[in-house]
Length: 283
Ligand SMILES: [Zn+2]
Image (tube, rainbow, N blue to C red):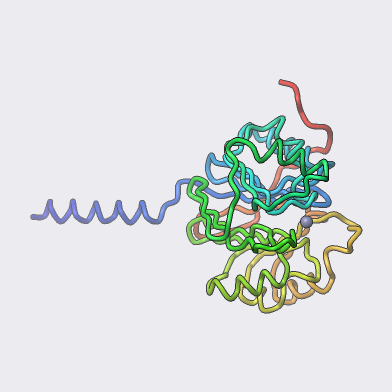
């Protein structure tokens, strides 16, 4: 009888341990790709890249991955086809193996060479268009598409992604604006996230006060360059974020920005800098 109780207690304990312990950590790194965005999501041995920087800065993504001996991406997602998100693919595809490719599937203007080249090189094998509600598994991490509005406006059609690792939630807004935020707020009651990557490089047409209240993050990230030609990020939005007591990080000031999740909590982690230069092609 005692032995039965002991076995029962031990098996209950094992179940509890397996439920609470998470074997893999999740690292999210916002690379400093100047004017644009590139986010590396690494869950255990699995790596996803969300956006690729621009045609000039995309090589930094290659350098970063090679410096960490990542020769293969499990998935590469393009949130929307503006050139500050998409055109680093031409730097990445020749150097890094990509298992699965995703974007929002929108029709691209074929009278523009860069989109024709993108269509021919990216939307080929192992490619799938993503829609709202689609879910991808990256090791122990789940990526859910919260929005991709069916509209001709490229920013509004951005793939908005919720990254979930245990209890930790991260919201990546692409270049979505306040109208997308309003739609998401109507559709999804729980938008709480520990980290918010602000929409549209911190411009004034994103990150409404009600949306910020709903997400209520501990950290916020803006990815853009210094002296941005369009005036991003907006001082108004930065004030709005900081006044809420949110820790705001900026790629043009902080460089590469890293966060680590253990499945329960998220905290900043240090990044070993990668020097700027041409892509490493040999060896
Ligand atoms: Zn952009």
